[in-house]
Length: 282
Image (cartoon, rainbow, N blue to C red; front, side, top):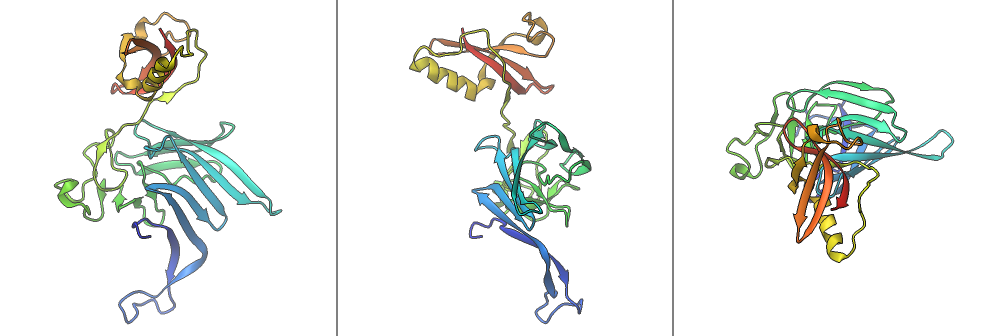
């Protein structure tokens, strides 16, 4: 479209003569029933429209490219519209590892190489899972990943064309990132640090969770938005609460404008916060 976003793709085949036409281009024709249309919300893929139905995507938040859910819609043999919600389960860099349905049944899971190449997958229920590294859509026809402004080759860990912003991206015009475990490039322009937010785990709190005034309400919202700014006050190996003991939970604290918030958090081996729960006023 006018913003250079891919809005459709078609499967084509060479025409009867199987040789270039006078203009130097091959004779191509669309294979009936193999057109896919794409609907965008800014730089986020919002929906795919296939001949057999559609897939609508929900992300973890408006600033993230990590997929959260997929809403599938199709018509059954009786002409009735059917709908199913599937869920993505991603790792610390937003790479989908599993997909389940609304009942928690496993539909798809896969393993990846070091640069985001899907090395093996098990598709239990004919699930449609095209996502790879953040904001990368795998084209099965070529094996390349559509990365918004460019195509990415997961075999070599490089882009196939030069960076459209030149040296503003990197001195190497084809490079993706030095370490995909720490960096993402959702637009295919310039790497940036992965800022995946911790996941909230629902638990029943034994402390005070309701704010007494507007200030407490504001501080609680602020802490929940940036839990990684807290300090560990009790390490996981010292937790005595039987609800959290031995489960990897650390007790955290943030003090802002005289308001103290306690909560529990888990960290991965690299020291990044992965899960949070039990936010309460001290």
